[in-house]
Length: 385
Ligand SMILES: Cc1cc2nc3c(=O)[nH]c(=O)nc-3n(C[C@H](O)[C@H](O)[C@H](O)COP(=O)(O)OP(=O)(O)OC[C@H]3O[C@@H](n4cnc5c(N)ncnc54)[C@H](O)[C@@H]3O)c2cc1C
Image 1: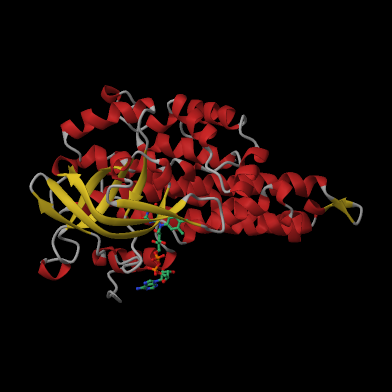
Image 2: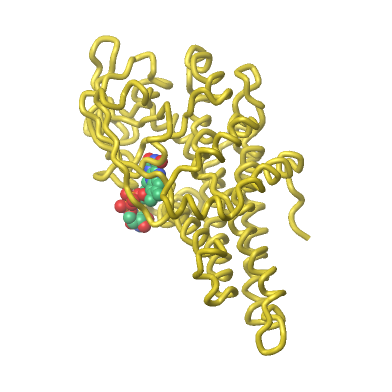
């Protein structure tokens, strides 16, 4: 029997909403490389993107585990939460480190859907995974920061009103620790684009609204600094851990979608006068995918529980993302194999989901970096870098 589901009411309501956006909807968007505006609007109107926003600011005030339930169901239905999941994980930074004034100013409008906080700008071409080497810098000029630099692979920047941006405010060489000297700014994209910020889109193998950002003397008011200047890495980590857990939940949703899709097909497809699912060569990989998914789901639940309890989550968030992304990928591969040639035909959605779920072994953090975290933090092995 599968793991008892958390938040069953939320799950069934999200699943009913997602039924209005079937495979054809996502397929057409994928073909046109278009943003799922209608889906995101429906999810916003139903209040799901405000799941984690406290009630005093107009949200549901629910824990991260509820956000996981929402996103898992979106993926389990065959959809893709990547269009809007940042609105949840950015809360890890804004709720824990934003000032009361910032929360008052932005959260009610985000909760109502008037403002979208969908962009999280960390990655740069020159630094890659080594975040401490980011070069985008902010220089103080009176009541503003002046931002210069470049970011790459920033999702949804063209579909967001606000962006959480990581910048250097003190050069790395002048800091006691490499992770010191970075700061988090909340950028109002509506004012920034064309006034120091330009955006170009990046085509990727799946429909992901990826962009590159170029900052040329962008002025950001000092009152938009989140947390303490120079301690931005700590603020961003809360967002990153939330992101890893939420994306792990999406991977569980993907894995469950692939397993259900493949099992249905294996029961119905007859070759050599019997269902292909009667062959152990088809059954066993599906059973293995199921076992791996259930185990990974337990880890996602544990990571979300720790996060919600305010306890350190780094290793659990990483392990949840590692195991869930691998379970999803194995389920995806098994699903393609079960479908045979039909797995490659777009009309079954398997190849689309296969492309989409591959991402999560690379982003938001790649598998090697997670293994390195576990080796050094949990096993006390020497650091290789
Ligand atoms: C579709 C998409 C959406 C994204 N959205 C966002 C976003 O919204 N915001 C954002 O900030 N970023 C985003 N990213 C960036 C993403 O987080 C990075 O691509 C990811 O963290 C890896 O960084 P990189 O591509 O620079 O790889 P690199 O750091 O160049 O690494 C390349 C490979 O080398 C490996 N490697 C590097 N160093 C080591 C080491 N010391 N030991 C072992 N292996 C190592 C890595 O594991 C990886 O497999 C997105 C990326 C994609 C593809």
